[in-house]
Image (cartoon, rainbow, N blue to C red):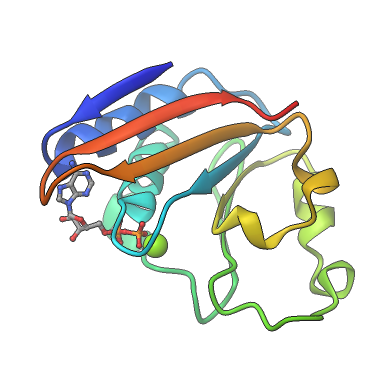
Length: 139
Ligand code: ADP
Ligand code: MG
């Protein structure tokens, strides 16, 4: 699926729409540079699960934010991941294998084998307010 959005609200709506189709155990990998709109997209996903989007912030400093929705939402931001960091020890894979919905910003920091089968959301900056969103399955 490919769509253009023209403001943050439309990107948030795209996230909301995607999340409404997801069941427990889903993994969504987000790709796109700084300011692409990844966190905006996650806000939309969160709102579909009944979480106040205001509570969704850049998870950079915590790496994983866990929301007590049903199913739970696990929001990861791997931007500040150190090279050689032990991903296993951080518990990332336990979340991804769990019963919640996992959404990962900067998922390109993960080994490719770990994102196989996940939904891939690529957000491209087209102009100041326009974004291209491409959603497919990583296979
Ligand atoms: P990322 O998490 O990818 O680094 P953010 O979601 O934090 O990016 O920020 C995206 C920024 O781009 C926000 O300041 C938002 O207001 C702005 N923006 C402008 N147009 C759009 C759009 N169409 N979709 C998403 N964000 C947009
Ligand atoms: Mg972000």
